[in-house]
Image (tube, rainbow, N blue to C red; front, side, top):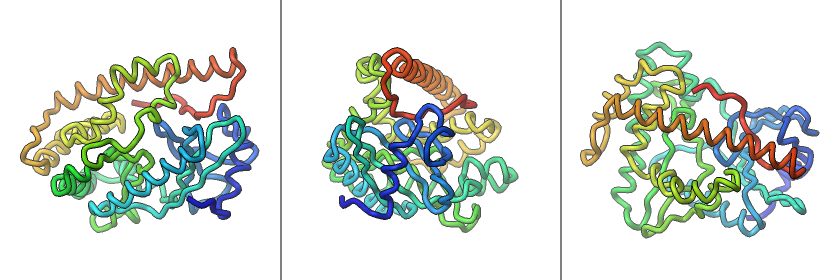
Length: 310
């Protein structure tokens, strides 16, 4: 993966980045979004690209390997009929710091994202959007059905990962943006090193996450039933639980015949458990940041969100 001069300024950005207070960074930036293992930036006044920062790697070779898997995953998604934004990769290596991989993705207007369209459209338009979205995302499972065990893809179907071009839910192209965690299996073997997912977890919790949760977290994104439950539960986080019965009607009509029907109780139970897990996880990450910065006087390489409304 050759270094591209186009994004060489990312080394200067990384050197001047204040992970505790973005406003104090030497190069101005604002956070566009947070993932479990990444932060998405707009840097300076660049409205063309979104920069997904992933400080996960011990060596450049590790970052290059991840980048190669990312590119293969994106190629498979496109084969499955999923549209993706234009993207590029850049590796930043600074002595005595984790190697950072930047996934540089074409920036798309916030108002085109499905979770934002929930709050700007009337209910009829929202259900028209969901009627198009659900069968589209299920094309991944149609691809899996035709290609297993050689290839099997996973997907995070949350609304914030989908974009309707021009905000047009009727005819606009649907794009998927959450490609930074390349979850796919070849001949039944997971291609992503699961230990990378643990990098953002507090070191004192990694053993219990590895023991109790890691396998489930990775496998849920391959499971159509769980993915559709997660999509419906996302409406709680977006403050629109009133839409859940209508979405479940769409989901239960579109699901594969071998996938069990989903109930509103199942969605509510899932959301309650998922909310508790992620609230506790963020609390422990904040404690870990305080521990590293205040007591151990070490750099905390991840950027944490503020209060999240769930």
